[in-house]
Image (cartoon, rainbow, N blue to C red; front, side, top):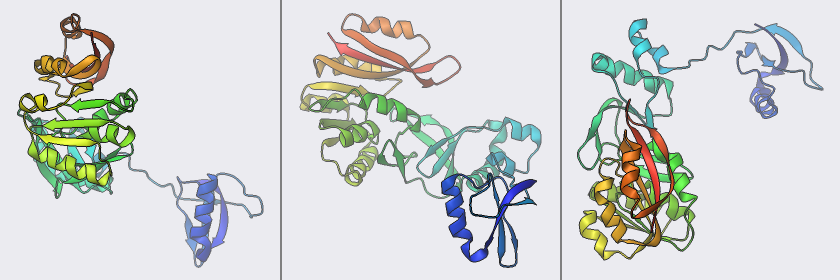
Length: 321
């Protein structure tokens, strides 16, 4: 492909590339040509004070998907997932049963495409009350990681504790509603992403409870690396622990399949006028809203993301009457 170019000595190549990138002039779609101690760099525009040539360059073939690394039939490749979760440096992917026999090849292809990732795990579904994913490592090694979002770092092992990277914007939405001085209860905190984000950015007290002792262990590590001292992790059943806590200005209930079963408990620990952020997976939004009307004002509601063809994960911000 013919492009404008500049000529530099090889010893000045890196310095010149940095300058061109900073100015937005480097043509990143074409390969640099070298001849002896001279390099020819493709550029988008002429540069004042530098001689500009016109030359033929090779196009850089950009790989757009992990699927381009696979030596499988087009029919199979076309049906493979285009999306997957990334937690820290771990990729988590779901595959149809028909494609499980190719899982190792798919894992290696994902690592080739995402060079900064260390592990690929196959998601075999969420199990039990603790919402722990059944994960099988198909490439790389190890499931301990540090996930970064919204300016915080979260210790997590997605095979031992629940964590969803898909709630990052929802966690930020809740943070933006929190005011300094609040007392908050995070009733099913998991590894504590809501608690860590709020604790890092607001002068509050947060009591973070979870049945999963391993999740609480990861939360304690996150408290340390984020250098916060206003989150108080509690391992145990919320039904047994919540009476030990003060009344709350705000309660977070991120347990989508079971949260409605604990709503009376949250009401009991809420101040009058307090706010409850409750998450529910349902296909019938109106049915859920009907259950709130007598005891709560509905401040805000919406869909966080789709869950299945018929169901969505909804958020409801409730104010205690």
